[in-house]
Picture (spheres, rainbow, N blue to C red):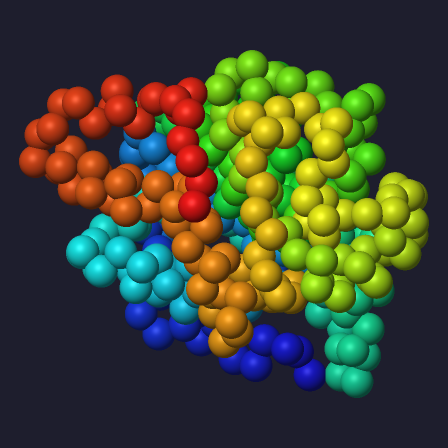
Length: 314
């Protein structure tokens, strides 16, 4: 039996996103949709915050994280925000980092991880292409979780080398990204140099209490032919990662397990995780300025472009 119990009702009640960047052929498992699609329609906007779920999430689970987690918790954190105002900025990413095993084999989902690593790599350019298809877009921000952080970095690589909108901020939660890839000479070392040089702020949220990254990540990466001892989301960025202490900030989310970051799971750690993500991504500020823009505040775009100013992360 599929883990997605009712494909006709895969979205949580009340979840009606203005924009989804859709990269999957099926709601559960399946392959990448190439090219991806902007659903339910092309949404013209100057700014967009792309959300990227992690490994082993079917569409329904990702929707819960985005709706019952990120959106709901940010509206709680910023009660002054009108309900629905975040839709003008958010773009929900969907990619097939899961499997649809038949019947009693559902418990084997974890075995698809090595394949999901390569799916995330292939999905990056597709996500970048979908972002370029957004009309009038000037700035893109990202928040990713787990293997979705790999997808985000792959998309950023494409956008910074082949052209695309300005990247403002990147929030990486429980990143299933090898530390070896963000250190000197690593795969993403040149990308980090470009990002830091362009004033892009990167925030790494990590926890040494994450059993998935501690125990499952190393063998999974080995099976994916990407040997790694430590994930970025376990202890945070290595000291020699470009930008650490400057454009690259970090926070240890006390006691956080792998699923505590979006905010839809009931845990003590989610309060800190929600606060950190919202503060770094300036959720309250952005929603207020988007509301102001609707009534003609011509200064908002200039303020949004100011990504290089120093700012303390709570």
